[in-house]
Length: 151
Image 1: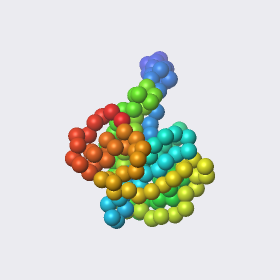
Image 2: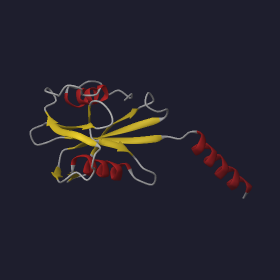
Image 3: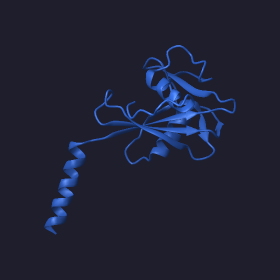
Image 4: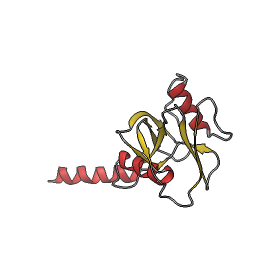
């Protein structure tokens, strides 16, 4: 009994002293091989759609929620995890999961005011202002660049 209490106390302290945040990004690819990028109203640049995983939410659920909110995208088949990246420059102990979505249906975005613009772009013909992490992920996916563990 005392050991169980010590174990639970240690686990609680560990979770509080070492919080981890988790984000998801979706690389949505259309039948022509173009990728979906979004431009937010609150930060500069073009990015893959995505965001943070909320408490008691799975990564898949967060990805599906963010895709629907930001672009009206609903995956038709399970997204495929392609890479995991540490985003310590943004927040200590933050990590980003990148998923590829090849089969999906288009609906209406549910988020109002967060996204300034969306578009599908050929990886070799990107709009001006694509974020550096987005460019690195595209190089990893489409140009055979080595996958970095840093965002």
